[in-house]
Amino acid sequence: MSGQKNDPGAGELNSRVISSYLHLVDVTPRYGWLRAWEHWRPLWVQEAFGEFLGVFFYCYAGIGATAAMNIGVLTNQPEFGNLLQVGFGYAMGIAFAFTICGMGGSHLNPAVTLAFALWRGFPWSKVPHYVAFQLLGGYVASLLVYAQYRPYILPLEQGLIQAGKSAEIFSALGTAGILAIYPSPGIPLRWVLLNEFVVDIFIGFVIWAVLDPSNLLVAPTTIAPLIGLAYGTMVWGFAPATIATNTARDLGARFAAVSIWGTEAWGGHYPAISAFTSLLSTLVAVMLYELFISDKSRVVTAAFREQFGNMDKHREHKAYQSNARAEQLRSRGASFGFGGDKQEISENEKSATTV
Image: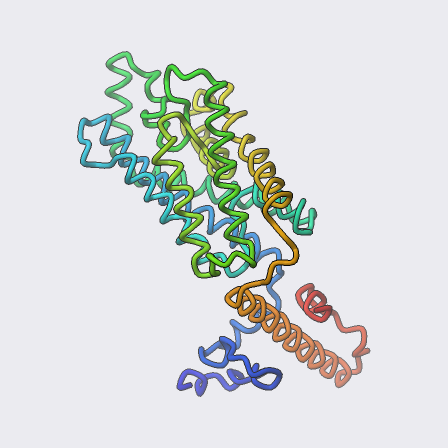
């Protein structure tokens, strides 16, 4: 590649030395500082950023569509947006989020992280930082949407206050309702709970089914749009009865609303439903799928076999690079009179060499 001529080390540790697979380094120039960063980058940083960015994309698209709809309602301009637009905003946001961040195995939902820890051996030690960065993604996305729509929001709030309708600010179609979710007026919380519980079970079934590598109707390339469509379908059908569907979206945006409007934006007792129901519902859906649908004797499809093969080759390549790098460090240490076997190896090297 022409770009490699400008970087003498571009061909270092070429993947074709160890496999017939074509790796990114074989077709795309990777300058020395990028390779050095990849080598020293802690795994948890990559995971955390993937969770943050994925939830950010999901919330930014969906909350942005909600902002357009709410402002349209408050200004009597329905052409600004509607529920159909909000559903597509969340569906496409989720599809884009998994497309960008899914290669790292992103969860983008605290309920999914818990399900993987309980049913797939996901390390419990990673659960806290996965959930924390999921919430952070929702928080930052909400603040950014607010900043972009602030020139619309402030005059609308002044108008509501002058009209003696300040309570409408903290309602489903109010300005604070752009970020935080509030129950639709007149609906008892017990029915809101039922609505949320059933909707989240539906989404949980879809997520676990599309991640099943023996599912003949699903390929890795269809996971993102199918999960996005599941969320969009629930928005179109049940958002009028109030749904949250994701703890990261709910709490992240609710914390943002409290940061802007104060504790009045919290929403009373409803957050106990919106923040935690999806955790229980998703675990129930996964348990039912594992007990009554999943079967260990099913054959893994060709598309998923290819995906797993690529993942294995990726780990092998990382291990090869880390071993080679560690050997270089030992050699340099020995040449300067240091004990080569005592040279410090990064966390990524240690994990890669155990593959």
